[in-house]
Amino acid sequence: MGSRGLVLYAVMALLIVLVGMFQSWNVALQLLNLCLLSAIMSIGVNVQWGYAGLFNVGIVGFAALGGLAAVLVSMPPVAGAWAAGGAGIGLSLLALIGTIAAVWAAGRVVPRPWRRPAMILVGLVGYFVIRAVFDPAVDAIERYNPAQTGYLGGLGLPILLSWIVGGLLAAAAAWMVGKITLGLRADYLAIATLGIAEIIIAMIKNEDWLTRGVKNVTGMPRPVPYEIGLQQEPWFLDIAQLVGANPVIFSSIFVKICYALLFAAVLVVLMWFAEKALNSPWGRMMRAIRDNRDAAEAMGKNVTRRHMQVFILGSAVVGLAGAMLTTLDGQLTPGTYNPLRYTFLIWVMVIVGGSGNNWGAVLGGFLIWFVWVEAEPAGILVMNTLTAGLDPSSVLRARLLDAAPHMRLFLMGLILLLVLRFAPQGLIPERTAPPRGAAVPKPAGEPGA
Image (cartoon, rainbow, N blue to C red):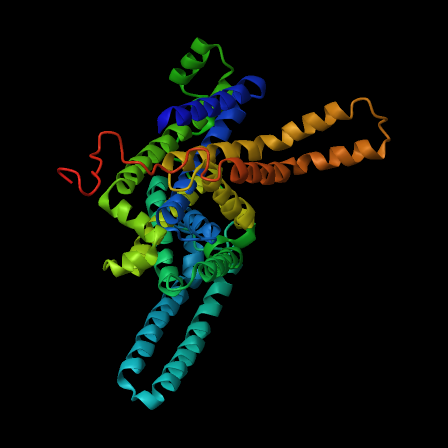
């Protein structure tokens, strides 16, 4: 990583410590947890863009699929909803599988002049059959106790398992998306992934039988203790007394520390794998494809297949982070999934940190989320200081105070412009020289070359 990277990470750690000292340690630890999750998402995008040059602007969709996995895996099943419409959902799923099989068979059996009309006809018939079974089942499920449930629930399994399922669900979606989009040019790939992500978000917002839609799924289980439970444990009260802390406040801090340790462990494992992959022959091949696709194809590399691999891997990491974020929040709120937070900001993190460098992507995740969170209180403080001598009824004072909450958007644009101007390769650029200790090829014509 180098001395420059170490200094930048030390400054980032100091900033978080200062938040704990001047605001509160609860705020600092919550900020740390969200920085860790942002760093994991940045790694996922860096794998796609920094390794292979894939411009994916559908990140929000894969993060939402991770959140959906947390609900489907960890929430307990709603017995009444299953009794009301579970059989209909199962039958509609079987009808969907049968329709797909029938369309495939029609494409193989029917003679060529009638093949396409036959496939369309079979698909239409299957669609109406599916809706005839699916719609009544959905209505019955959503009518069952809609104030508290109104959906099928999940499997009631440990929440940590949902992190793995979130990655797998996002990887499966990436495979389907990749089959459609990876043959497209970069700008068309961006448009296609953005549209597919919006479809995923619309589904999560509107399919109440699956996710409760905008009514949100709350009360999700935790992988760490509850504060109220800790406050009743003698060992915890002894620790709180030992450090001289209020048990109520200390319980919240302790829970956030537990989350931070879990998230940091996942980040360390991902960084180890990402660095191993980047410095392996596979990683060098991916960068060669990124730098010159035509030359890689001329050397016999299957570029589309390699793009599919890296697209699935990066999306799986984003899905994993999405499940972890839902776990931290303790609820699934589909209305919060927007491209500004889960696509634009993640891209800014990768660009500012340094695309192609995993350490840079992690630093960008920490820095940009820190600025995003702290810009609003800092903006209010600055505006209050600047307008302290103005008349309280001044129009200028009112305008400046109203603009304070929007400082974060201004700062994001300013940071991005400054980095692109003065450090276009990011704060920690991609390492292009051979690793230390590696054999350097000798120029042609020298002995031993």
